Length: 142
Image (cartoon, rainbow, N blue to C red):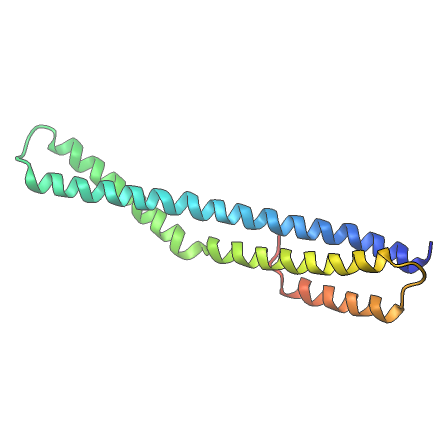
C-alpha cells in the first residue's frame, strides 16, 4: 500500500472522530439551551400566575408562604435568564453542527480518494490538508 493511501486511511479515522466530537458537542449545547430555556418559560408563567393570585385574593395566613415562593421562583428565573442570555448555548451548538458538516464533507472526499485504484496525486492530498487546516482553524474547540 502506498504512503498516500496509508496517510488517507489515518485521516479518514481522524476526520470521523472530529465529525463525531462536534456532533456530540452540538447535542450537548442544544440540551443545555433547552435545560435553561424550558424551565425559564415555565417558571415565568408560574410567577405571573402567583402575582395575579396575590392581586385578586384577600390577605390570609398563607400570604407569607406564597410571597416567599414567588420571591424564590423570581430569583431562579433571573438566574436562568442570565445563563440563557449570556451562555450562547444555541450559538455554540450551531457552530459545532457546522464544523461537523464540514468535517463530514472532507471525510467524504478522503473516502473517494481511498476508493480509487492506483496512486493518489500529492496535489490532491495537499488540497485536502489545506482544507482540513481551514476547517480546524474556524471550528470551535471541543
